[in-house]
Image (tube, rainbow, N blue to C red; front, top):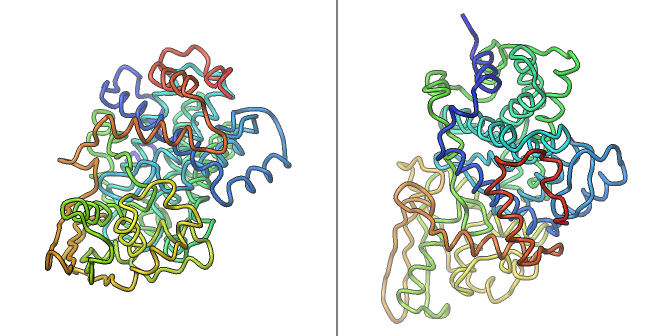
Length: 451
């Protein structure tokens, strides 16, 4: 009987470009632009420049572009730092059903490989779609509740390896070994979410680098276990039970790379419904922060696990702010927004925001199984009595589309506020290249004259 790993490898290698629906190609281009934008904005986030300096000191071939900083590095190193900057400010796209960040793991790997191998834009785009399709399928088929591993770190390497294997022209058998090698490097824990540290920003980067290296090792004849999903000590047994039927359903006919939404706040997705609810109440009632006496946020068990802890910005303040529900609510209450300025270390330690943290209590509704909603926010106020708001899910989810204008505003801000900004003309040029990437003859020229 053909193994699941073999079938996924065959899917990655043999699915023709023509079989991919236009809606999936459009989604890949949009989410590619989103990922590049947040990487530019994240390039000066704590930890990123230090990591880039280390990789630059190590040096090596000039395989692929380092997105925001400029210059080039070996493909695996470029994939690592580009993924880290894209993930750093928690502003990258996220899966609709589960908290997997496919594009920050797959795009840095596949774009680095495409540049190095001088692949066509058409081949690059197909590899991106298929790598993200495989990553999303993994995450969506994993049993609930999550045991505590980090979805992107543990699963993103599979999609990145498959995409890179396709660009290298590997056989199905070699790709199966590449997936096995990716599994040997799969790791990552949500401990990095609940105990904020700069290493959180590297979880997707480890997967991106593993994808590049796994494909290259398989190309050189390195073998690996071939049943790494359903094997005795495979992913299903060691990490999380996988629903094989769900994983393989409509493989090659339905592509799940479009099952992701663009974030409107640079914060963990578990905070977004609470931010939305706070902003809705603040604007609806024109609330002054001092008018609010108390706030109760009722959230799901998963949300409480990731962002429900006490707020402590004494260490890595930016990471602490991005992974804390209380900070998110207090910030939205005081500043009436939560954007790039609100996650800077000084803002994360702002006494004006800290003064309202004690008003907030968090309650868990054990009957709910959502990862980002619903949230029920109740405020007791001096002027309006008790008011409340319920938000079911994040913007971009089914029934809550993101307006194109909101996405465009985000992209422009990300590209222009960075320490390494693009001019408006350069941004327009890059956007046009992303939209027409399928027409590129040689991806080595993709960033030409841009940086």
